[in-house]
Length: 458
Ligand code: TYD
Ligand code: MG
Image (cartoon, rainbow, N blue to C red):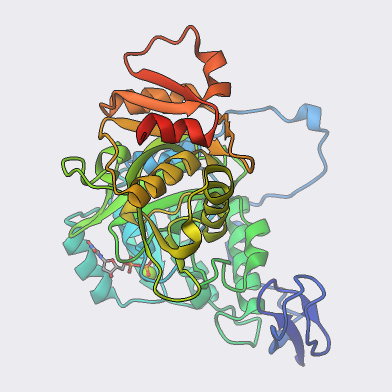
């Protein structure tokens, strides 16, 4: 006889408690506990249908020295950006979580990649869309693949039965939040279901050496909805992000057991699927022809890639008592800090101005090296003097108004040169290491905010 049991789960981090709690002792969030039914059929002991999949395999203890190290076998996809974020291709037996807000293009990207991968059999399990809908999307992507199989199902028991029949070499689950296992009573998408279904798939991936992609939705605040627990169960966590109103999407590695986490892939959403963008700077700098005040180009590094981005600032007379500060794509507190530096160290009266700041293309950038460009965009708008179009900036601004050195300066200079800039303004402290750098671009070193002002506007 089965015993019905319920437990309370924190919907934020997955913490389990026997009674309801107001505040989660694990993640300190309030009001996140929800009761979920957990029914365990002890006699069955879980979904282990694939056990006989590739012969009986028993795990036993082995001395580490006796394990022969082998090069990780990877499936190299046709999508260079995806290979890059995965650290060089899909590792056999790895489990990869792809998280992103609804509508960002996760299903499109993985359907497209599945259809383009030739020579291996792929199973795409969708719990969200019907076969017709997926077919329509595939037609739109103008891709077809004989070894691509589709299953619209949400019960893991049935999914594993199909897997056993088909023996695919790659599995894509869209999405983990729609799956449910019959061994747990609570509804699909609840913490206990997500945890259990992901655990079943993880055991499957490890024991059969089949790579599995799990697509998961994230909440508005950017946390992977409920299943923070998933982050440590999987080998790799990729986050797909970008503003839905812009065409650019960034695929970022948050965790990777088989490669660097500093990698980043850039895509453009087009009418016929995702297009990998190999030279992002070219499209991010938009209005190069027009001569407008308030724009400056920053030489930033995202992940390991240099990226030139356009910063737009608008400084206007404030009509209310409290001036407004609005940013998109940049941390608001960072802007406030830079304004305070300009007010105190440069004597500019931003206290009576409204300030709006925007990073073109809908990107979110955190690199402190863009400080100098932000500062120059602000000054350009404040003075209403356009900056010359052939210069770009790389430098961090300190609290006392000093321009600080930034990392990977050679890479930034090289990217600026490649994009046709003639002058780059950077920190004096960066200049030392550059004495024997051969470049055609003019390197101008500055030490303080006042120097920058005198150089550009005086
Ligand atoms: P989708 O992959 O369904 O997002 P997710 O799975 O992350 O929820 O993508 C949804 C959006 O993508 C939808 O608004 C339409 C758009 N889209 C295109 O712009 N071009 C295309 O070729 C496709 C298939 C979708
Ligand atoms: Mg989807």
